[in-house]
Amino acid sequence: MQQGSIITDEMKEQLGVEGTPTILEVEKGHIRMMAEALGDPNPLWQDEEYAKKTRYGGIIAPPALLCNARAGTGRGVQMKSPFLRALAGGDELEYYLPVRPGDVITSVSKIAEYNEREGRRGKMLFTIIETTYKNQRGEVVATSRSTYISY
Amino acid sequence: MKKQLYYEDVEVGSEVTPLAKIATTQMLVKWAGASGDFNPLHYEDTFAANQGVGSPIVHGALKRAWLGHLMTDWIGEQGLLKRLSCQYRGMDKPRKMASMISPEEGETWWCKGTVTKKYIEDDQHIVECDIWVENGREEKTTPGTATVILPSREAKS
Image 1 (tube, rainbow over the protein chains, first blue to last red):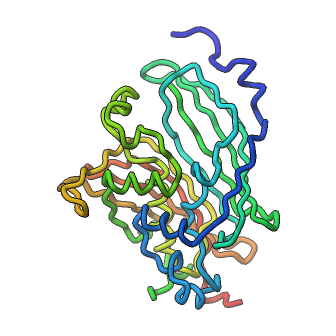
Image 2: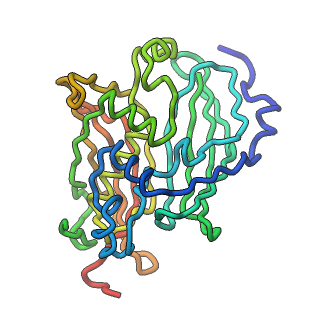
């Protein structure tokens, strides 16, 4: 077993440091691409006539629009690891407001936590990244907490 | 338009209407483009092998997107998805394409869920669920939870 912690002082200094904000201008075309890619034909994501008659009064984005590279999740944070292999461990999202075409979403990520565990193949590092997504009015539309595993 | 689900329609133990999905290499390419995740782990054989996963695997975020689809279909347009979480526990391998539009025979995934809790808080009718993606061998590769707010037949405001 490896001795000592794999979490260095340099890594600890990055806790809570905010990455560069990412701006996502939400377009209908992007929403449609997303819905097609995940195979979700819900007209609320695509059909303006249909969506007008709903509580939203127009097209909204599916929940999958946030928490990915395009939405800036994890952008600009200094993720360090002594390992070469990495996998996504999980995600946790809270949704507060719908995201609509025309919205300008600014996301900011930071490293919230490190955990180390002993796995079958030795030590594993869990890095938890928190991201806040705000719209053009400064309202928080969603937050996410993503776990990355390196080993 | 689909029939709207109401708070009164569900009980602890109720099933979330299951949703079938087929991951294909083509779908992974589309997902990479839509999500901006161009990690070669999801489309390059040698890279995936060197990363120790054998061959390209389905993006965790795509499986999360499927679970989002599961929930938004079930709660209907009057329901609100408040919280969604999942863990990428098991790896899934996409079907290869047999033609430009159709995949080879193979695995079908199911997104499923059950209601674990229902309660009223601040006049909101809240339902919590365990949710998961199940592979062709009925293994839960992507377990998670979701919290939704449903409309109520009794509390029309």
